[in-house]
Each structure stands twice: as C-alpha cells, then as structure tokens.
Amino acid sequence: MSEKPEQKKGWFQRLTSGLARSSQQMTEQVTGAFTKKPLDQEQLDQLEEMLIEADLGPQIAARITDAFGKARFGKSSTEIEVKEALADLVAAELTDREGVFDPLSGPKPYVVLFIGVNGSGKTTTLGKIASDLTLNKKAKVLIAAGDTFRAAAVEQLKVWADRAGADFMSRPAGADAAALAYEAVERAKLEGHDVVLIDTAGRLQNKQGLMDELLKVIRVLKKVDPDAPHETLLVLDATVGRNALAQEKIFGNQVGVSGIVMTKLDGTARGGVLVPVARASDSPIKLIGVGEGVDDLQPFDARAFSRSLVGLED
Image (tube, helix red, strand yellow):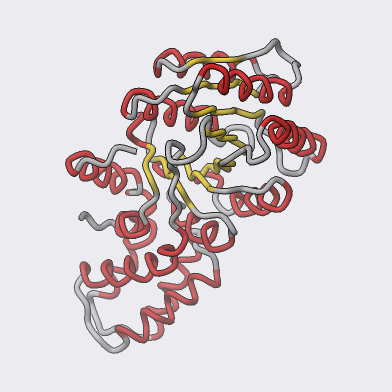
C-alpha cells in the first residue's frame, strides 16, 4: 500500500507496537537468562520451548534453536544481540515467503476473491484494500457483496464502499453468490472498472457444502473471464493460533489460494503462528494487519515482521 518513507516508518512502529504481546511472550524469559551467563544447553532447551509456545511449531523451533546454538554457544550476549540473532533466524524462515499484491499491474478488470472462515476479517480487509485503491491510487473499484447469508456483512461492506467512494453491488439475502460475482465482472467490463473486489460468505473449512458453493463462484467467474479470479486471498485470523494452519491446508487444497492475508496480529501473543503458516503454504504471505485503520494493513515484509516479533525497533 502506501510506501512513502515517513509512512513506512510509522507502519513499522505500529507493527512493533501491535506485536508487543507476541514479542514479550517470545523474548522476556529467554533474553533475561541469556544475558546472565554463557549460552548452554539448558538455555537452548528453554529457547526451543519458548518458540513452540509462541506457535512457531516444533520443526521451525528446532531449526532456529539449532542455528542459534551453533552461532552463540558458550558466549555471553547482550539483550540486543540475542534479539538480533533471533530476528535474523526468523527472517531466514520467511524471506522466500513474501508475496506482492498489486491489482493495478494486471488485466482490467482485475478480479480479487476474498475467502476464509467467519470472523477472520475478510470484509474489513476488503474494505481497507478498496480504500487504498480508490483514495491513494485513484483506481475505479467495484465491490461485490458475495456474502448473501449475512445482512450485517452486506451492510458493513456498504459502509466501506461509501467511505472509499467505490461502486457497490449486492443482492437480497439468500441470493446466488455465483450469479452476483458473474454480474459484477460483466458490469466492471462495461463500466471500465480497474478492480473488482468480491467478498464471500465465511465458511467453516470442514463444511463441504459451503466449500462446494465457493468452488461454484470460481467456476462461474471463469465463464466471464477464463483467468478470473486473478487473485484469491485467504484471510486468516492470527488470534486462532495454530488452527490457522488447518484453515490454510483445507482452503489451499480445495480452492486454490494465490496469497495469504494475516489479520489481527495485534490481538494475540501468538503472532509467531505466521511463520509455520508461511512455511506450510504453497501461497506467499502478501498482506498483514495490526489494527483497525486503513493504514494498518500493509505488504508483508519478512525483515520488518521478524524484528518486530522479537521486540526490536528499526
């Protein structure tokens, strides 16, 4: 999204603040112990346990602990040295998992489908993206309220559309979401929209009927444009911890995901879950969110995330 230097600095500060609960969980005990005596096996075991508790998962925790031990075993360290080393090792797990979300660089209209379970933050994420596209990038955007099950979701999306100055489409409760998606793309072609953002009903990943309906939306979109959707963003809520891994697996296997958005990183002490999700997924992390404001959704930056996760300021 916005990339001016002062805005980027402000985002980094918000990211560090948003991940404060996670960084405290990850480093409070370990840095205190590591700065009192040379690194030994007991401390390494403590580090591995702490990384697992932070939801990085046993395999990643073991890799980071092993690398940390090889680099610093038998040495005394300052708190900053410990954090710098941890940040570098976490970043090494994530650097090749960065993705780019740039809907204005592709075909027009560029069709973006938002998927995920109830409460993951799909509608809010869509609204933030719409606001950035219309207000900052002056794009012509059409929002389609494809969650035809919940009136509240349609109303919330209409508020975002009005705020962003985006065009908006919805249908009565219970209407066919696939038909709405089709009509939205047809309208966008006729009216010259740059981007179509399509919300979908939140669905539990273990409810096959709902998943089949989502697959129908995708099939119908391909009838109007064989390459659509050009982007399918899976929105995951960081506060659910390692359950996000199960969600990513089901949606990734059944629907096909081009990118992941991790939301609510400011609402959990387990922000480390982004790391195993990124490693396990075939899809890159494209955006992360640490607050309610439009500017609190930003492109994923492995280095910035890793430093914030261990409580470092840039």
